[in-house]
Image: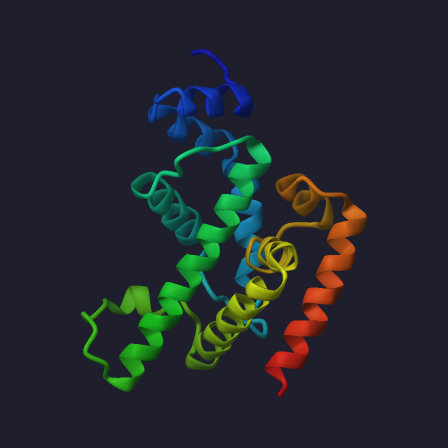
Length: 186
């Protein structure tokens, strides 16, 4: 078996070898597991989403909605953080709709329990809406917040994923947190 680097696998994927996405995912699985594990406790200490479930959902979304192009490893990690955010939002929306008795397609109770409780679902949806507003004002700050908060990345991981300096990540993270906090507490 040939050992591949992320760069080689990304090149193979860009050249049309879709199986390279599987190998890339396997290669960075431990990193994604660490990110997903950090994400679990984000909502007032509640286990929002099982780590393995979040990783597997991320894989499935990436497989079925393959990005047109992956520029490099850092770009792949940023894409994965965005996918994790989308997964959490989807589950929060389902939980919220189920609680309201909405006319959405019923989901099984295992899926509903991936978001710990109704309060966590509401907080997640509010955060999502607020982050969407920030993205319109300052896309880089929103990307930093997404990587740090939804992806559970460190300052260094975020700097690597977004190809910016750690100092820029720290500034953008603080600015984004301040803006989001003030928006959520209106």
